[in-house]
Length: 489
Image 1 (cartoon, rainbow, N blue to C red):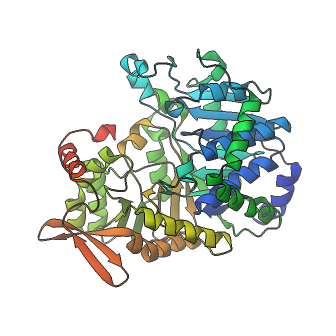
Image 2 (image 1 turned 60 degrees about the horizontal axis):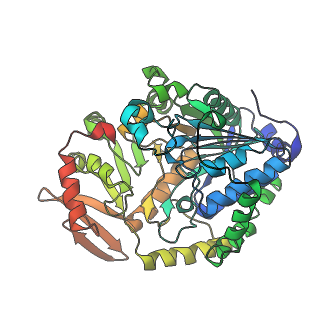
Image 3 (image 1 turned 60 degrees about the vertical axis):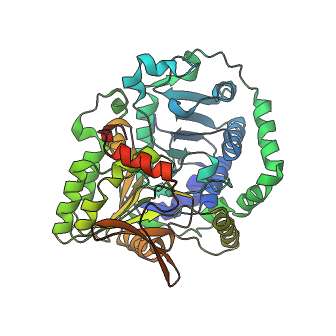
């Protein structure tokens, strides 16, 4: 079923741009976390026909509650809403979701659902093979005309609404050619065997009335701790900029790469998987690779390939989380054991620093300045890295939900985009080289020992062990490095 509408205010607003760029996609990177949330909230508020939403995580925190209310209001206006969530992270949400589903214009399905709703752990005892496969895709499709996709889930840490944690993430607003293909992808997932209507699952949770959901959103909006954030969002006037053509879209050929839903059941063929599609779309690098991945688990085969590229004279730089910054410490072990070999091959490694509370407060001050008109930067400071992107030869860019780890390759379904644009690729390469050294440790080898180099202005500090990370975390990582668990990471 196609949910594209060629009528309505969104189609009217972007129509002249699409006419100037047939067969191309307009891409607007959303690097600022609050702007990324404002884009979603305001576009949901402008939807007239359909909202198709697909997410791995959707929490009922500040931003999650506001987004739930945004789709509730859209449904009240007559918009048909389809919400497809992966079920692994929906603990405690059954009451909210069944309440939303009571609306005649809202349908909800769960991907690879846990049949036993409570206690949830019982599912792992008899159905681990299936529920270990998750839907990691992220897509926000408005009237079949506008798309937001990339790395962000719906939760406070992805949108700068959490004082304790801020993810450096990346997604993009897209219009034009690729949107129809993503809509078809959504339909394929929506209609697959793994997507089960919420009403077919047995739950003991009492549905939360729609009025209670609205009340919860009102409480969030009036909360003094969230008021500054909500006001900043309201001032962004995102859709007004769309209508007045003030947004600087990058126009280019864009390839969508994605896994089929059958991967969720372990039934996809190798040539159907995102890894194969990505290789076909990117091609062989000839000069440069700048790679950003929060969960970088290259495995022996991946390291062999990177070392081969380096020996061919290709310049490679990789940014991932430091042990202190990562939110999944066990994954760090799958990367750490390959550091020496990568460094010996001449590959540059950077590890994002974890910000102190003081530095996070400074980041919030800088963000408030950006709300007044100053432009944000790719890779701005954060507590933890979550963006997944790379650029090749200053010509091609990938971004999406795909991590460079075995889980993304073999188990989870993923969605991403290859943008054939030297303008965007050079911008990312420039920001990588300008920004990363100031927010990340440069990892190096001295006397065959790994050192971490931190730059603060002209001052350089070198660490002989993983900076900031606790002693027990460092020891646990060293132990995990020796275990054959890469396939789980």
